[in-house]
Image (cartoon, rainbow, N blue to C red; front, side, top):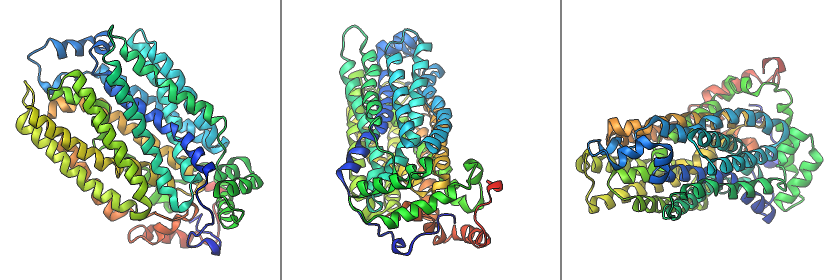
Length: 514
């Protein structure tokens, strides 16, 4: 493969360096891109369960919830307009991610992060001041542009800045930031729901401007990654200085040589989206599509978007529903933090497999309880409601140390430099595409499948766990510019990449074939 060239001193990935405060602070600031994403996920689910918000913008749903005694518990929130409010962000993010790919490749990671923060800031202001549903959805679209740029650039930034042996922990920080954002949103929703006068939802939506402002201002002072300095700025001297700064040692020649060699391959690639379709990149392309697809069909967004709605479905009150969402948010953050501590020790595959089994079992428990105890009318008894909440917490914990952080980590570390921006854009676009599909269909599926929706997602969890076991190699402690090794050593993928590696040995990339 193109990045199979590496200096002898770095063959085993023994680059020099250690964690420095410069890297930690830079990654903390960039991680605010995850906070804005998580904040929006938490806020959208919370405000759509607030009666004052529904009464103002989604009156039909409000009537179903408060006055219609004949409608099924599972169908009270089934509204295409309501789901459009949620998914409009992801539609905008889908298109923004492709523009972000060009910006990230041509100008660097920093401009993409800056653009994402600024767009989210504008969207928060517009949504908080909304006077009609069209203004509300326009604000959501601007939020989507911000999330599209941030999700495309921040995972790359974290992977490229982190020392190879700690890359898993740093990259999992993105999901941890998402969890912090979602938890903050749940706490704010719980507080603003109690504001008399019915305008608490405005506070919830507008407070998104706080992390967006921090990200926008912080991005002005963020350093570029060494990879980006070489790729988009032709700055080998700057990259050399930056590597010494971020690794905390002057002995960085082995890593710098790998970056330079990887960059030479990018110079011959004019069309990265065509290049990634070549057979030699087949494993990366499959993972770019499969991992974000599987991440969305875990069913986590049914919980993330609509947790308060779901808890109201089983009979909890407005305030209790929001507090239950806070509980699941705490569980999610805690499990992701644990994942950060152990991912570079246990590896990606172990966490994927353990988390997958845990999610599968808990999905069956949730579906079974709802099928047996929750009818079309009335609610669950207090005891069963708490058992259901416990099962959901077990499920969220499984996601929090597996598909949550690893769904962002693994794609961000497997792409060679010449297709890295394109590969990450495909990952983000597929994620947004299926987030839209899940957001648009979840409430209708809950209405028609009822408890069967959890068996549906449980089936997908079984499929993705088998996929990881059979087709995903371990990537821990492998330098990002030497990642081609894992595919050439894998029982299945080596048949494809070894064959291509042999046929392409006499010559490098043909620019006309890119």
